[in-house]
Amino acid sequence: MISRIGGPSSVFANQAAHEIFLDADPVLVPDLISVLKRGRRVFNRVEAAYALGILEGEKRTVALERTLSDKNENVTVRSFAAESLVLGHRSQTHSVLLRNLKDPSKEVRFWCAFALGQIGEKKALPALQWLAENDHRIVKGWWAVSKEARDAIRTIQKNRKRTCIYCVR
Image (cartoon, rainbow, N blue to C red):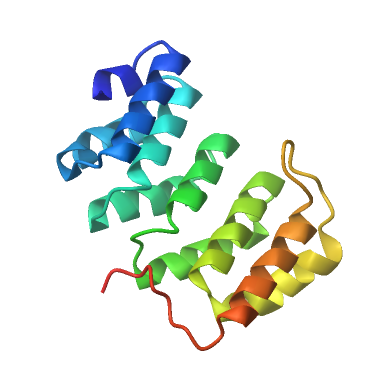
């Protein structure tokens, strides 16, 4: 599967990532991190980030956090990293997502807003409110960052009493 994710076909890479997502094997984490860091093509790194989303472990989380924060990485890869951090992250991940709400990329801001809403990060409310009022840029295939920020605010407020159920303790 790793050879398909890191290979020359975007179709095979996507199929392999979906197979991993359906049958998560933690033994794949080191190889997926390698593709995430060194994959030749954007789609290889995107599929590695996607597949890592279902797996667990601190190494996987640290790799996704670094990818999200790497301003030299492709925006699509960084966006997939943000989305993949929703499950199985650590408490430090909340700060990484919050910092990246100010990213120059609308896609990164959008997916960080989504992730912060899903994990219920109350500290994000002021930044999300600012985005909801001011960031009306549309993410292709989705909607405006402002709408995603409003959705995240509603999700956080709805679950105000709940602590992050996704944090690995």
